[in-house]
Amino acid sequence: MHDNLIQQALQYLPHQLAELVTSVKSQADCLGQKAYLVGGIIRDMLLDCPNFDLDIVVEGDAIILAQEIAKTTEAKTLASHSRFGTAKLGYKSFIIDLSTARREIYPKQGALPLVTPGTIEEDLARRDFTINSMAICLSPCHYGELLDPFDGKEDLEQRLIRILHPQSFQDDATRILRAIRYEQRLDFRLEKETSRLLKQDIPMLDTISGDRIRHELELIFREKYPEKILNSLDKLNVLQYLNPHLKAGRRLANNFNKARLLVSANQLLSLYLCLLIYPLEEKDTEQFARRFKIPAKQTRLLLDTLRIKKQITLLSDPCMKNSEIYSLLCNYTPLSIQANIIASNSERARGNLNLYLRKLRHIKPVLTGEALQKLGIPIGPEIGKTLQFLLKEKLDDKAKTRQQEERLVLSTAKPCRKEGNNFHPPVA
Ligand code: ATP
Image (cartoon, rainbow, N blue to C red; front, side):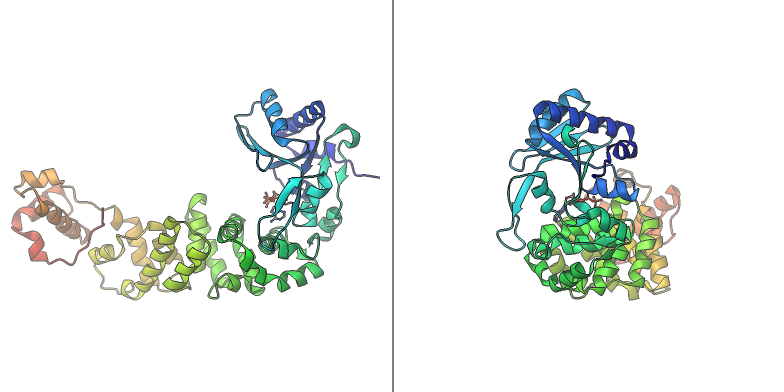
């Protein structure tokens, strides 16, 4: 007796998605193709967790099916990859992925697999874990039946992460990171043999390209509590395998908690990364960034974080003037300052970093270059120097109003030279 899950699926999905599943079914029938609902959505439906990423696998041609569905539904976009036989339909508030069922052969460990069209059974057999290798048939002959060739439903009930075959981690070691991510997200355990093979195959991570590992790290950072996953990776020595100086633990967990309270979702991923590399030296971070192809902008953020960390003793000085704090920090990205506010041990340094971020960096003289010319400052470098001088005075509370700024300019014939040149405003 097969489970029939279609009613459960249609009730679980929001109304619009349920209607789309019905359209997929009718269009596939018209084209004589067999369509299946697959992957994470089945896992999460059986666990009663929300997941609205529709993944459809087709025995036939996913691109032709997607084109037909786009004609009869309100799809806003249709993107297809003929090389992979995949298509993505975009709607107002969700997307559907369609792919042609495929067979995969790994020519070399860690390399991308050779892909040819295949059956749904072959498509499920190329997947990572039993709980991700279930499908619901949308075709009339077996409408609503659950395909579960690896007993994923049983593993869901037992709360186990299990690979499909002993070579799995060797074929694709990103599954090591994925296994721990699901284990921690779902509060499952690794099945015994899976756990043994995972530990044994950790060195296979060397066969994976930097881009693919970075992608998996990003997926970890998108989880609700990435620190739990990092902690588990630390205990298994996977983290140290990515870089020997990386560490998780209570301190990182506290810092991640603070990060979630302080910045918006779109900055969180970068901030997590800064906090993860915080114990590293600059040269190790550069190596980390090279190995995992971290984009240049994010690499700069990481290095800024470590350069500020080096200044923490200086920033802990209670006699530091505002203009000195400003000079020290004005060329660093705000998020790298935020990372230090979270991770630094020194309360006084944290106070100064906060002062800069909240107040000092927004301070500007009222007088503009034009206003200075009117006061008799000649066009040329003197204008810039006078503006720097005014900013310094303003930061140190020596000029509050426009009149006070004008008085300062007029009373100082060559203000910048008199003041010396130890103030460094931002580089434009
Ligand atoms: P979630 O997005 O909730 O983490 P998901 O199951 O939707 O879960 P995706 O990363 O979108 O996960 O992948 C879709 C499906 O593709 C997975 O369910 C899994 O079956 C398969 N898959 C993804 N990555 C791999 C991999 N490295 N090896 C084998 N199968 C994979």
